Image (cartoon, rainbow, N blue to C red):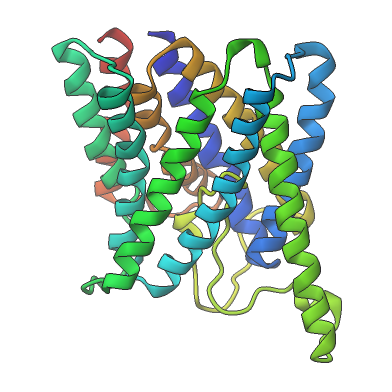
Length: 319
């Protein structure tokens, strides 16, 4: 099934976007990174529109706007639950629910059905999601009820993002994504302006207001997050050439809309349950880039998860 292969490729691109977003968020506030990424993604989509086209149908515009709002809500809940912690439990939980929510919608509401091999592929994909989302080295403690509820909310909202995109018609082309990014850009830009205004009233310069304080976690405009580089400690200089965090945020946005386009293509070519299960494997892209670019160690459990992700993609492609 071509949809499974496109969705898996899109997940890797999502992870690449989150990797850049994570590096940018070491030197800029996450909301600033998200706003810049959203704006750069919008510009990229507008540049593509004359070549791709799409009908501006009212229903598709509304679904696109809803997906943009859902993305912002997901980011807020995701940051909140990770701040509460522990990440080693809440991050895989969020990723699993991100997959399960639209999977359940596709199977129970839309009546999608698969061969026995397809159902095995879905099960393998869920196990892979847990393993690749695992953060090694963190002390495991029991999560609070508040943290669990926010993680469930973040995962459900991210799942709803995919459900909203799945409701759009093929005739709309990239229009839902354009509206999504326009909505996301407007909301996050207002948040950044409010942040600067409040900082100025406290006597803090605008430049200092954009610098991260406390937990540093990077996210793409869709609400995905660079869990691998989430940190509450001192900012460390990444290996390799030092790139401006503004350009990293721009790259994050461009890659993120490319991944969104892949998800949209996969949704229109295949089933929501399959696409959601494979899209939730986005941490795989982050992990692989961290290993190659930053020379970070990949835990054995994550290698197992990556292998299972490939296996799940193959099973779902043929099942």
